Length: 240
Image (cartoon, rainbow, N blue to C red; front, side, top):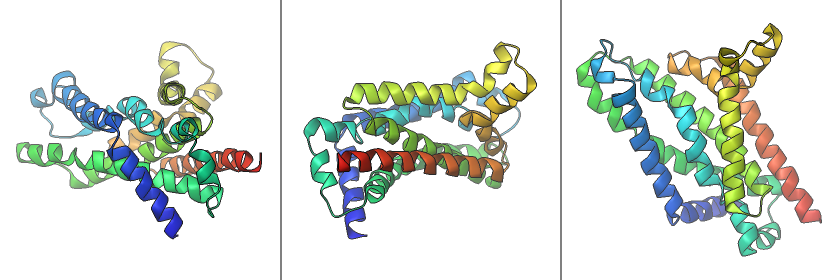
């Protein structure tokens, strides 16, 4: 446990000393605000809800999360510190979880910075607190899945740029694939499969304030799968 916490603290130090983390935070906050007030037109609407604010999160996370995860393992390979990590008396899964927890704590800090938007707008109408809580739960879940996927891509790469591009590309596909039927005609079963695979489709219920346990299971399952695959790759490198 001490080793796991030490690795988590190490990841936090790396992130807080990394310019991409601050750039990603500034991008998330500014882009979400611009979308909500300028594109979505919150002030021109009759209803007081943050649905439009959170609806943009899946696409914004496509760029934000890879900026945080690209250094996860790719940078360790570049600096040659991965060999040191693999010699630590920690199981591969503990190394993966340590990296994951460190990155997720950064994501949670970023999401905390969005809370003032909710507090500042509450006097403008009767906001549904339950819906806002559900929207944050959904955002944390989809972020957790994106982080796990980003770290998996990073463990396969030796270059940060490749890790960022690979993670962003895969996240973009998984986010938009559920909307493919809007552009082209698809057979019913295929459209259903694509909707189920899509990160964005499962997020819709949370944006509406609905705590969908099927979506909850989907995010937790995909997160666990990505973390497991990352541990498998690390274990293979350790035995090589």
